[in-house]
Length: 242
Image (cartoon, rainbow, N blue to C red; front, side, top):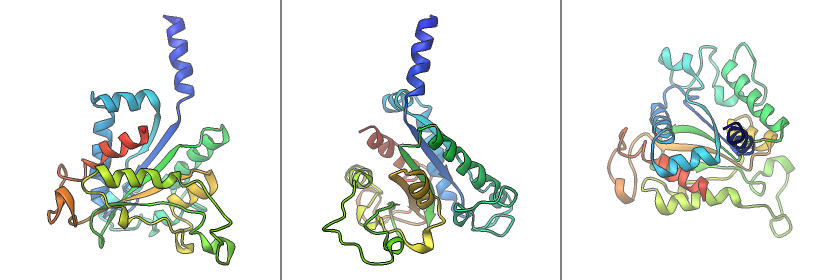
């Protein structure tokens, strides 16, 4: 029994991390429904969920802006700040959830366990469907201050694998809506800071439409709690496994 427990403990210590966050903007309630679906799926008896629990350690922050949600804010915290623009230098008093979430990510990196995947769940008020924002060295022109010669500079394009497969299997997901451009105006957001400071190649923002889809199973239908928002999670995790 002791030997078995030691083996299991050792196995856990070597599992890669997946770090998930949601609801940094209080008005994006659909992000909470995606997170609810995530949590329910991960603790379910589904064979994929069981395999995920054996293969990964999940660090999950379901709500990064609880004060803003409780008080009915749309985008800001009680300090009047957009918390998704505070990841570069969060204040422990004004932005405690961001400060401590970033601290945990730094700790994981310091012990050589930076997450394999980071994803921050959001809602989008203008675009249809579900899609990802990621990070590409080639498309981070503001860092170099000049155009990048893509014929010379190469990079691992593994960050595109997950959205490409999601586009094939997830009814609400659209690859054409994804973007991997890293703009200077986004340098203080979660996905960019985690990518740049923590070295997490697969660092994403997942956007879920406020309204409807433009194609597939949910075309011309408004997404609901069970019809779309909570369905994306199984496809997302199946692809992480692959």
